[in-house]
Amino acid sequence: MKAYLVLDFSVQDFDGFRRYIENVPAYIEKHGGKYIVRGAVPQPIEGNWSPERMVIIEFPTRQNAEQFLGDAEFQELAKIRHKTTISKLVLVDGAE
Image 1 (cartoon, one colour):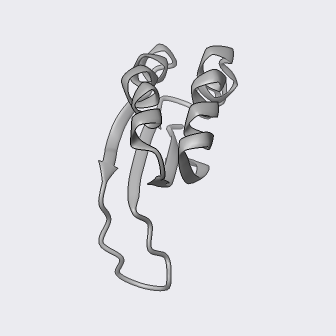
Image 2: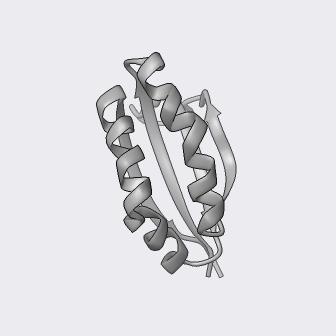
């Protein structure tokens, strides 16, 4: 079953974030992932959720997504995202 990482983020330091943007696609691909949505500005429809930018990444399985998240080299990039953005990340399973 496919799995998805959904990221809601606001960039606080674009110059610092640039290294993350340039390097993270290789790690996504390494673990079989692909972008479904990449840095899009969403249009809120209901509720009080107002994300500034969204990323959705599809993985073949939850295991692929978890391996991506646990990849030591990706973890170094994640530190950059944590320092340069305000972000919320969830992992969800797709429908069968």
